[in-house]
Image 1: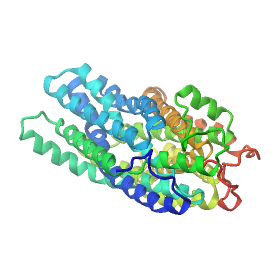
Image 2 (image 1 turned 120 degrees about the vertical axis):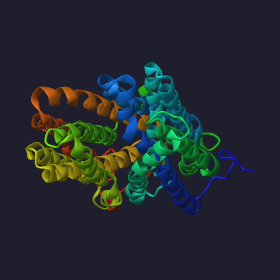
Image 3 (image 1 turned 30 degrees about the horizontal axis):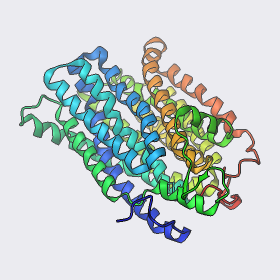
Image 4 (image 1 turned 180 degrees about the vertical axis):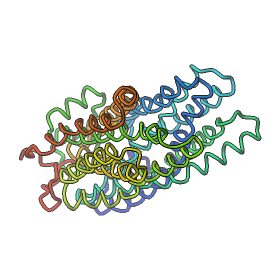
Length: 447
């Protein structure tokens, strides 16, 4: 049986069916993995409060975010050396181990083990995030935004289905003798293992390795191409930063992803607290569920439309559109007072703005660096994004307590200003991989 390294070099016509199969497979595993991730998010804070106490619940919940950010580094190193498949499989399996450790920590009531488990549970999120980049390895330049956004959209299905799975998992595993709220993490671990098995068996040929062989065949004189049909691989965050530093489009892509995520997390994480100020304990969970559902719908449900606009209008215009929506969201949420319907509109706009910066920024980043350098640069992007989100989540609580929700939204809006300046800066003519409009593209030298 041929392996990824012995398969004949494909032509552009051969790549199309490989790409269609890859995207379908990624959509499937995003649904499975998304269920696992969202189950953990939905009950993580409640479980942490029971095991570690309310004071440490937020820290335990943030551990998963930090874990996803930190795991992006080794996962992308694996991808740079061996391809997308082993990297994604490893990330999901690490997430599964984390889920098991959370269950064990709950059973034995061991707080340090809970933190370790939550940290490793972030592997599932890391895999979900890296899957969006896998979707563009073999995508045609004019369709990259749509292909990436379709994989992002698939997360919606998992996010919608997860609360029902969480309740079912908790009820089922209580009958097995597990403590309350531990069962959902066991189900998450099973979901991660299932996603890993599907990818390990079916993600063949590996899209990144195929893209490298194609790039080497089409541009044999390219300095990033190595003998034998594969591109020389540069891994590590230092090498990734060096690659990004000399490419303004790549810097804009990372900034769009990170700033959009920072603003979204800062405002979203304190919205349940804001709602708790005006609703009784009996009503607040129901209201929070409705508001956050609208927010998640804004993040994911329209991502295919955002991807189409990214390909149709260009990357920078959609980034700027996302920024405008983020600013509108901060304005609406910050001035809503205790008017829940208006606050819901603000959170929906917040999700849409995040989608714009995430989809367009990720697409721009991927096409702005050589094929050989993509895994490391994409890992750097996810690391920066994750740390920005974790920092925003931690800081927002202090801001909320000190100066209130309206000021928090104002500070979030101010954080967007540098991104506006960066996006409005004229695109340098020496960056042929950056697309303003698909019709203006120059030949993609890397693929």
